[in-house]
Image (cartoon, rainbow over all chains, first blue to last red; front, side, top):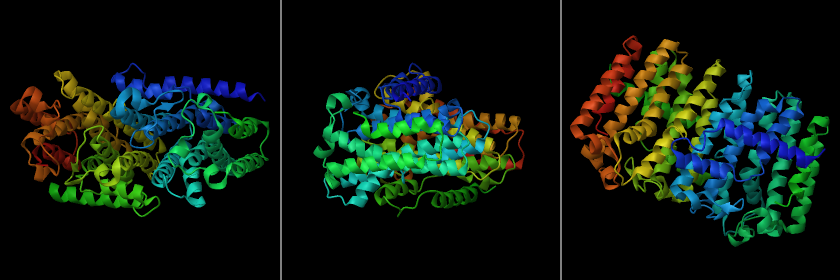
Length: 293
Length: 293
């Protein structure tokens, strides 16, 4: 399959969905909506919503039925970047090749834009146009849990606390699994839930999502060392400067690459019971560690 | 009816609900959960969740069925206070008689605690134990819309932009209706939706919620001028110092009091078709403008 074409198609679908489902940029209050759109349409990879759609497809569902949930994941991912970049947290000036949200709209504007995207995610998710309302509620609950204080925000909290400290491996793994892995896992699971997955399908996709989520974060750590600022669209080498615990800094670069490759193998193995409809998920797992940005 | 006793009973029910439904204070990461609990259990009035429960009661439902939604409203109200108090926004040191969240847990800690409470609201709401899943989704959608960029956050954005400026009356009313009124209206509506309200009941409660929400904010503005810091548990007179547009500053104190009293009358009128089960809502409308804090 042609992954590049597949990703481009899904990115276009997600961008169309976000434009249709989110409040318009020109709506009052305009500064707030401009800030939301500025960060949401900044050329992100749309990995999480694409995983939602690919997962729904893998169990035979129409991906359009999962478009609301897909867009909700992207809203949450984008809000987390806006808040992470704030001066009080990571204090980053550059994101996706452009000044960060608070650099353009001020700190207050960025805090509110992040809050608004997080809130919009649940309004959009609630609008999912399928008959099985129980599945919609289950997806909303999984999204909220994965993004919450024992998921993504929990990982971010431990990450901040660990800056400049010697971090034991279990804490590093906690940070990575929670800060990035949980939302990627939830994206895969929610696509399957909305798609009406059977229990054993959901179990396989859960194993896939766990492996792919951790592989993604290890690859991100590696890219922060080896990637170029130009390709990444943000300052690289930032983890080391901030004294952040990363896979390369704790277990070394070679071991990190080995671990990422093993996780891709585990992700593919988890899909062994799936037919060709899971090929996009297979290709995405390989792409996660081979990408240059 | 004995309103004081009623409010105390509902506050206890909401506190029990929050303790049961929210992640525990001692759970990992502890600093994050401590910050969430610190602000959530700071002696708030629990007005919004009480309105959810009283509204469910007014249409004959068991208030326990609406306890999840009630707690979700309190989580969202508390998150909004944490973020509003941040140095980049209102820069307040005192809230409910105690140092604000960022004063105790730092700015990053307060941003994340707010994000986590906002996210938890939707996980808790999704756990609503009623059979009509369509009603749960409707309530989630209304909560998200009321709290979002065209609701509460929109009001906050315009409020920040308007600081130190001459504010025309329509802008002042936009700020008040959106910053406070929308969430109070949504609390009344969501209680009714979860309680299985008929269309004409929901219409009456909507008129009640609109009037009560605006009356609440006008009363808040009046208290900021006339209330004592000791009773309010926060610095008073802050609106004037910050050059904030308020009802007393734009239409005068007497006119503000007259308008608040009129709105209470409208709220009571909207409940004319309801029986004694709406007495708590009636008493709350009167309390909103007579309270000292």
